[in-house]
Length: 97
Image (cartoon, rainbow, N blue to C red; front, side, top):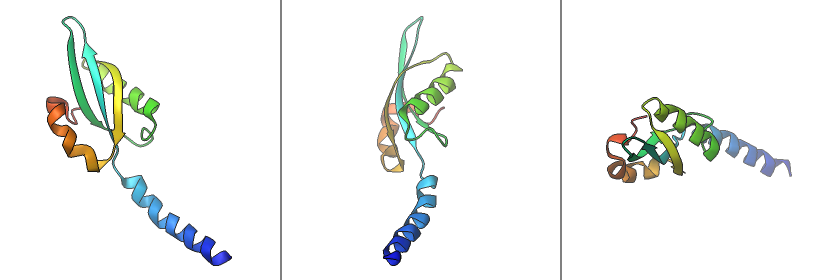
């Protein structure tokens, strides 16, 4: 019975570093008033922000606030596999923050 447990433990030990290195991104919507401006953007999230949507929102809100933007919502969290499909929609706000 110990052998299957050791195999699973070994597998998880080998897998965890790979998961920790996987990049995490979020796409979001933001606004700025006077005059009203809207934008859609994509950001790379730091450690701890992914996959927690609330932490991601706090991180994004802080980054974009420096330029006077207010976060409206986080659309989704995703990995490298979906990054390129978002580039065209995000335009100048692709990985800007």
